[in-house]
Structures are given as C-alpha cells and as structure tokens.
Length: 425
Image (cartoon, rainbow, N blue to C red):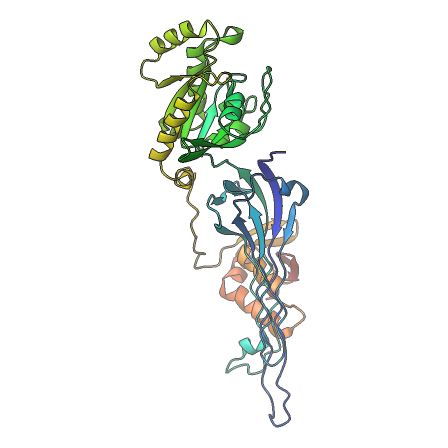
C-alpha cells in the first residue's frame, strides 16, 4: 500500500535532574557543594533513507519518544546524556507542525538529518549555584522537559519525469511498457489511485525515474477528485509528460484536455507552468487518431508533440529519448526539490527580555510565558533556596510589578505554568 501522509507525535527526552550533594571526605572540613548536573535528553531526529518509498511505517507507530538524560551524581559527576532517537523517512518527506502548519524540515537527500524535537538540557546541581554570598546552596534544578509536538508528514515523490493526464488516457500502460513497474491497467476511470514509480533505461546508457500519477479532473487544484493527493507529487518532477488520448475516446477533445490539464497545474503552482513539457499523443493505433492529431497540431502549434501508441510500442522509444534529454538539462532532482521549498527554516534568536502576558481566570491571575513555564518545570519548590531564586527572577523580570499594576494584592492566587502560589508583598 502506498501511504503519502501521516500524523504522528514526537517527544524528546527530558533532561536529568541536578543533584544536591556535599563533599564528605574525612580530611575536608566543611566540604562544599558537590552535586553534579543532569544529562541532556535525547533529540528526535529524522534521517532520510533511500530504501524507503512510502510512509507506511507511520500507520502502525504514531508515537516516538526519546530517552531522558541521567540524573546528576555526587562528587560533581555529570549524568550521562541520552541517545538521540533516529526515525527513518523516505526521500521527499516534508515535515510540518500540526498546530501551526509551519515548515520544520524538507528532507530530500539520502542521509539528510533534521532535529524535529529538541531534548531538554540537564538540570544544574548545587555545585553550580555556589557564590561568594551563598557558599553552600541547598538547591538543584530539575531537568528541562523535552520538546513535544504533533507533526504532519507529507511525501512528495522525487521522480525525474511525471506522466500527467486525464483518467484512462494510457499513463499506466505507458509506464508498464517502458519500465519494470506494473501498475494496475484496466478500461475504467481512476484505475490508478496512487503514484507508481519505474526506472526507464534509454539505449542502455542513460536512465531516469518516471512516475505514473493519478488522473486529473477539473477542479483538482481545489482538491476535487484526487486533487492535492495527486498534485503534491508533481511538484518535485523535473519534466512533465502530458499523455493525451488522440483517439478521442468517450467523445473527448484532445486540445480541450490539454488546456484543462495546463489550467489545473498553473492554478495549483505557477512554477509548474515553467517546467519542460512534452505531449505524448497516445493511442495513435486508433484509425481516427491521425485526423485528431492534425487538428491538435493546428490548435497548439508551439507545443512539442510526439505521436505514440503505448499498446503497440509506436514512437515510445523516441518519446523516452526526448524525455531523457530534457531530464539531463534540468540537473539533479534534489536541486529541483530544493527550489520547491515554500519557506526557509531559519533559527530565530530568543528575545533578550522575558516575554509574558498576564490575564485573569476568575479570581486567579495567570502569567503566560514559555520561559517562565520552563522555569517552573525546572524548579524544585520543596527546596528553600530554589524558591528564593524563583522569587528573585520574578522580581527582576518585572512580573511582580506587572501583577501589582493589574491589581494583584497580598494573598491573591497567581498561576504560572502548572504551579499556583499566593502573591506576597
């Protein structure tokens, strides 16, 4: 079964907890703090594997969780970092955040790697908090939670050339003739419901990957019929082969079919209109096809047309040689894929000042801030020194004054992340 979309959940590993410990050697009086840091949690990493062709594996496993880092140890020993969780995906996989639809990675080249969820850093042990004012801090951080997110996977085939056309024009028959691929062939519409790939060898010297793509219908760019299920795969192809039924089966007009296909491609992505294209005038073994071909040439004088019959083999070799020539002139398929990236994924530096929003939930003041949520998750509130540090950060960041400005008074309930506490003047 060909599967080209999937929705999964990934969870990076949490950082290990820092440790509170002190030196206890016999001849070291008043030994100082010696709690080690926790180890880093494992990342969830996607890597491209050329041996995969579909997203089938993600139908049966939808949750991927990396390991947590080890906790810190005495004698200032650092906990071990966790191994990254490696998930293999086929070339042509696009990864998006399921909530925001933001592009995370566009994976096209064998061995290409992308961190999809970042592991949490290890919490600091009490040895890291020693200072001239507090030489024996009785506090340590919890490990930072690993990133958790739902992601959408979308496969866009990496083929050199793609066969496009209305249903039942002979695309599957043509692919089966020129390659070892065996798509289903029958005399009814939408016989092909999923893309098929075949390797075409030309003159024993050149080869290219040819894709048989499901048939188009009017309105495909808007999602009608197979719609985007078809059109996403054509974005990566370097050369388009329009397969036209010159036998005019079912009363079709070959020129009208060509224009309809062209409109759908342009409406979906204008870049497709600039791709090298060639028309395969198929079914020339039908008696009326010659007359229809003459009319077609008159209607489209600027279009490159190669008459063929997939059923008898007429002109097929000529067509494949021409496609091979066009493929060579278009360069590497991964370069074409790179040109189709909708947006560049860039690192965004965090803001210099802590960002937060204060709102009311009945009698509770709610402070929303990703930075403070992370601080809450990493603070051990059963440690006096840790609570004092948290309070100091709230004061220095201006949250205390902002709460007062919103009307918070002594004893009011404040919520930050999963923690609720009383406001104290």
